[in-house]
Length: 419
Ligand code: NAD
Ligand code: MG
Image (cartoon, rainbow, N blue to C red):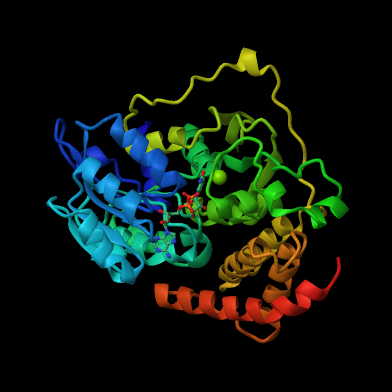
């Protein structure tokens, strides 16, 4: 990686090369995986499995799946395993009996896992619950591979500043942001014109608005390219995920909303591009496999040998592109609006979307009502004078909780309203 890029990121991201301040050459790097039993966690553990001599596992966490957590802790000889559900401590201890793995349970144990001394932490808890654990890793100056986009969406006002202050290194693990991270090193901030993140368009890319309105859960869960957790798969179908990613890119790289464009690219081969002042556009390509951006974060600033399929463009034949449709996918417009509004609006956007997705999964609202609930919640939040700059995790969590309550109270009227 060019030194200039490191210095540039140093200003906004404090992306200090690991080999300068972490494990020395030949020494195993210690790693912690928050959300080890999820989709990103699974890809991360798969990469670690392929490089056992280079990495030693400090801590692993899960929400409630004790069996899967204990299996991983045993396999990797983890020093600490934490389950978020406090009622499962006994079960976890039993499952790890006879090993030297310490066990913990409850939110504080997940935070403790992040605070323990690992050089590299994968932040892959889903949702706003990932914020405090990620901050615990950030505050001790770790290298944090950030998959959890909600950290930036909920706490964008202060997350990166706090990372810079602690000397933490934020490595973007979301595929589009990882692509930008790789492409940005081709120029400096003054030379940047815009960044482009791609979107597959999801399963409803070519559907009529009326059909999207009535889409079922099974249809929403059929992502054409990526295999991911349930929440993010539904967000991809509504393009709320791309909205979250626009916000994520803005905070991560200190970009204005107008500097971030979304391009629909159904094959999901190009993940992100950066346009520079000389009109060069630098792109990152790869198969739609999360192990590729995670491998980049794991090896950074070097590259490791990844297990993913090699890209065969001749076989793929065609890469196609379309403008996003803000009318059929109103969530994308709402994300830009929330980003421009700031002062907690993106936190409300995320919280309302989490409530809406849970209500859709529970069969309480139609697919089309997800965006309507988010819009109604943000409007109500602004109308009642709640916008304020967020400066701490407690601020962000208070807004998150308040917005969830607001969204839940608006749910019945949104559920009744036809499109
Ligand atoms: P997932 O639902 O598959 O896994 C989530 C993990 O977090 C699990 O290990 C679960 O046990 C844990 N968890 C859930 N709730 C928790 C809580 N309250 N406290 C502690 N742990 C909890 O989700 P995922 O698809 O792996 O996504 C994880 C994060 O990465 C999300 O923020 C998502 O937006 C982001 N992301 C995912 C992908 C992907 O391909 N899956 C791509 C880019 C970004
Ligand atoms: Mg993504």
